Image (cartoon, rainbow, N blue to C red):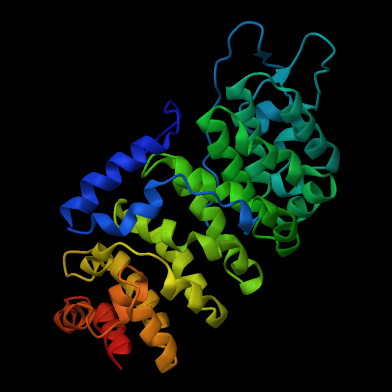
Length: 350
């Protein structure tokens, strides 16, 4: 699912959406996604992958034996010009683990990140920061050093791999609630990356992981009010791994009663209901049923329900209205071979 060499364009996503959703007989349901949507009005967990050492071209970064970066991420230390190499004794480095790095080491990494002209070096520095950010003490230190905004600045890096590693680092940093308060201002930019990146790309996956962390509590859900159509449209065209990540966000949002009006009114592809099928993987189906169960627990007034019925392509019509195919789909799933799926189906039918 690598996308390091792909220039993210919305055109590739549009082509995939048209091909797949048209086959499901619901192409009209995603027209909103096929327009270039702006999320400017809504300014809102897996560990980062570790890459081995990389060879660098002349004039770039040269290995300094025993250096901190050589030990932590295989990244060579900047030399030449006004840059200074940072020497740390080999015995000291070997004895250290990421969570026990000293503050000056993190400061050095942030400084190197801002000064590196080489995309591969920026990506490696971000990998190192992401690995160290798996520990609370480093999450706090990076925030205190102003590192959250330094790292988030690379969300707009022209190189896709750098953007991926930026998202991975922010994902680990977002496990800290105090960090989330600063990172929430980048939600709109993360949503834009999801919308404009190729379907099933590493960029989309990394962005969705970050949104999953940011949506674990209700605190920042309001920043995702305008994202429901994007998430639903991505759900019907993505692969299983990405579907699971999309559904994690949707389940988090639908657990908040204050979000339900936005969710049921959101424009939705009619083909969403087709995912409630025995051929859908159990991992996807379980989360889909949790999402549906959260919605079914919502009880609109008669007036609101009537207004929603007049909106032909909203999620309420697709999944909750009496005219929806969902009820018959759920009854068929009662005989699903997975007992956990059966239990979730029964919960939704109650």
